[in-house]
Length: 151
Image (cartoon, rainbow, N blue to C red):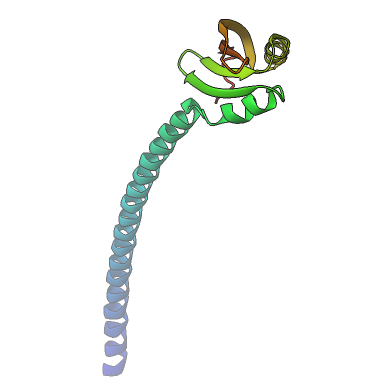
């Protein structure tokens, strides 16, 4: 009979210990989930912060003007007998002053026509023209570049 009483008493003690262990395990699980959600929230805030920085970077990239593109465009639109000596590029106003020399007025006219037909230029104005000591035609052109070409 003592064994039966000890067995029943042990059963209740073990059952109570099992319930306490289950409650303790459930508390640990809840604490772990809270920590995970805190870590997840911190990670989400960090990702959001970097996402905002990336957005700013792409805005800057969209506004960036690649003025070096102008060299290839000038090369494509150059007459073989024209020498460009100097240019001044204003990217804000999409204007360029291009100075150079040609052997004849006819070559200068052809150069201006080539530039006018270029798909990256909206307008070409001859600002200065003169004849040098070497009998070359010196010129200065004001060129309006179409918006968005240098982006």
